[in-house]
Length: 145
Image (cartoon, rainbow, N blue to C red; front, top):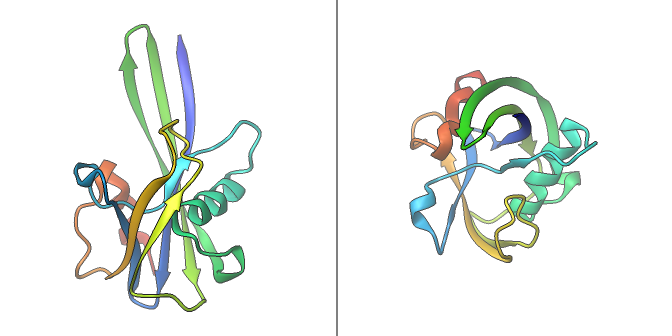
């Protein structure tokens, strides 16, 4: 059986900085950007906004849509299933005021993890100081303007 899973990945920038986070209780999850699974029937851009807000605590009014950067696809084999994961990458500019670092609790994790999940969010200078992002989330970073 073949299954398709649609995901969104968001790059949120402020001038020359990229917003990243780490799981405070699970540092082995690595440095990430807001991302997650698209819900059934959900528009891709709506999903990108939703994930950005759920994982950061920012407001829709503070995020200016800059464009879709691209997509990539990978295949996973899980026992009797062939899973295709298609990730859609979006760029948003943050227009509000924020702290340099803050904690936020995601209360609706798309992977079914027990909530809340504590994230420490912070800004990193782009492109100079960006570490390798977990799950190859940085694949579209060169397309940021």
